[in-house]
Image (cartoon, rainbow over all chains, first blue to last red; front, side, top):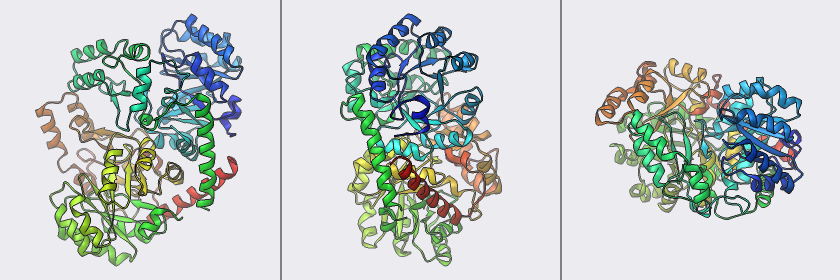
Length: 315
Length: 315
């Protein structure tokens, strides 16, 4: 499938694997890139040496383009910005902040830059700053989210910028991919769907929670503090939601204490009681384990088949 | 455009106008039906004589199928359930409650029943109760909402029931309609897009707020009390959001007092300070006034054109 995104990134399928902190490491990213999509290594708050190692290990597994994500408000952002250049990363996605000050150096290094945006204003700002594309991410996504849904956000971003737009959030199969293309996106970014792959190195309990999830298994915590985050409803999230009913300095401190390290506890330990299992609303559509290669190929083939038959049906 | 919904309802375009209390009266509903979509008169909490009058006035304006909505928890539900039969309403949409006890009588009267659902479980229950179709409504919609987005909800409902599914929420043009069809929907329900039509009898101020809205102009109030509702961010909504930061009996009472009658104040008086202007996230895509006929025709034509060209692009 050819779109502006496959051409921009030099990949076969317009499917990008979302950067999930603690989760998107070299096994997963290399598998998605090798399958013809774009794998992304999450920079998160990890030391630069760790991420360099992840990149090099991914390179041993695939010679295809590889991406990396930088959370721009993270203390390691400057170091990772340079690491991307040193390691000749082909694509950067960015979140939480303005990549403006790095843009010239990245462009000179030939890196394609795709900020994740949750509003029209931010998409415009990123386009002006020189982004090659933007990833418009809806509130149905897992992890840190904005308020707009994919359905409402994507066409509004498409109308606002000249650069290609990827749709993220709510996309689990070829139906979602075809829908995203109809909304004007040139590709998709998926996170949750890659959690239940053999290549994803998360605790078995995490995969089990995704596979067993229904449509109403996720909750959003952090709205009162202005940092909404979607994850699977676990005992920890229930406690947080209870504390959020009355926002005080004390309740916010209690929430911070309870959630510190909880993503690591989910990913590495599968700690159901005290973990934060980031996950999108489409977990209810993930019933089986598939390889990254199968996901990328099947999603694209299903989208193509749907578009072909729609063409006949609605002629 | 032919789909299971156009066949089920005997209409030309698979576009249903959403039932908006105080808003969806005979001018609007008749215009949408006459245009070849399905217009709906909102029962709301109005006296049965008022709704009978609305139906009869709509019938004077169009001989095409007409719909009505019943809020099942409303005190007038029993009366409206009978009124629909007496007035030979072709289609009923239902919200907030279980239509089970009316179903046999409605079926016998030949009425098609399409409950609005926000989760897979409710969709299944409605299908078992004998619904002819379900309207899967995403959280990007205006008014009372669920938590799932259209993109995440629609395919999960499609997978869960055998009856046709309509998509609602986030649909403002042919892109959204084409996306909904790709997700497996057989039609769409739109509300916000019909607010800025000449046929819609709301205060000019309400239309002005919709036309001027951007992607981030709506807010959700009522989450702490379990009745989330999306509307345009106005002084009243800001006050409610502030009060919601600390949920107590007193704050909930203050909110109830401030919001009582606020939809009527918005619709009839255009009262910016104290009105609740229900509105979906796609208000940011509504820039101009169009007639209902133009909306219905243009949306369908754009969707068809997009699907045709996608067929060539992704062959």
